[in-house]
Length: 217
Image 1 (cartoon, one colour):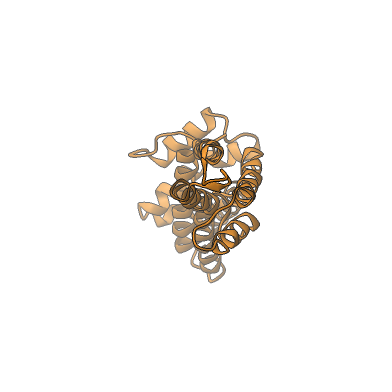
Image 2 (cartoon, rainbow, N blue to C red; image 1 turned 120 degrees about the vertical axis):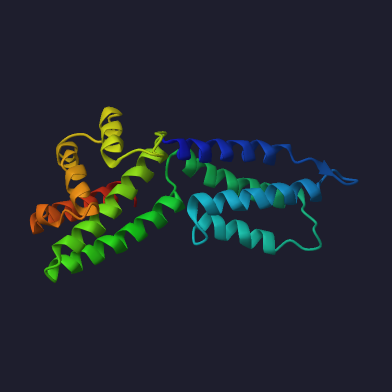
């Protein structure tokens, strides 16, 4: 489990405990404390959005129930509905069935870079393709390393690659292919155009496409 995943899991556990601790008040003891409920609900909705997005069933159901509250009166049965929705979301989080929105957005951005790189390569501009693909790969590697607890500030691409390999986060065939990437990256970023070939650009594009598919979906 990455540090980001652990943080999300711990946050959901904390909010689940807070939900159970919301006191019941009123003459019949069947009303949730308005102040504590809304404080929790705002945090819970934010957590659900961060883990699943605004289009998820968890978010839409929770938001719908919030909009149905009249005069800030929350009876115990409605409080239990909120608790149930949140526990359903927590169950998915505990099972790892959630998305990291930052990663997903990053994947889309990197995908745009790769698309541009492929277009440049098709048009015979392999140096431009190499620069775009290498930029996407280096940033993706650093974000992936950071999400898994590695320090990337001030690190070269080669150092990041070595750290990922040493940590067992890259293995098998990708491990061998990744070892060749820093050399191509240095040629691309240092304007050593004569050292770059269309095959180099194609290999980086192919690798970064697969890397994004596996790690940024």
